[in-house]
Image (cartoon, rainbow, N blue to C red; front, side, top):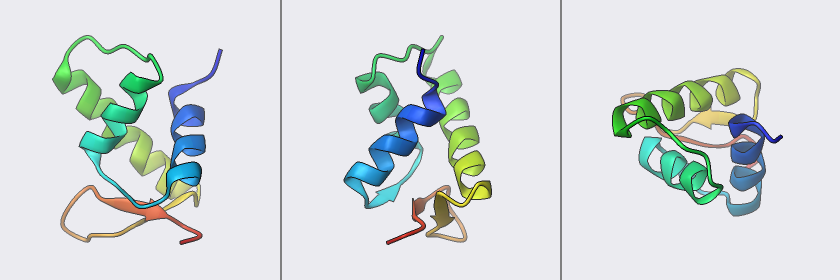
Length: 73
């Protein structure tokens, strides 16, 4: 089984660009991950984005928003 974080890491590295909560949820749903509701999906997406930033995959693109970009861009 592939984790949500693994799926998102591969997707971010393949597509590049900026990543926010909405784009993250869309990518996870497209990869067939399910959430109880929209609020749960957004909360999980923000957690994954923060975790990927902490591990060096992403860097914060906006100081005021949950918006990130791949670290190698």
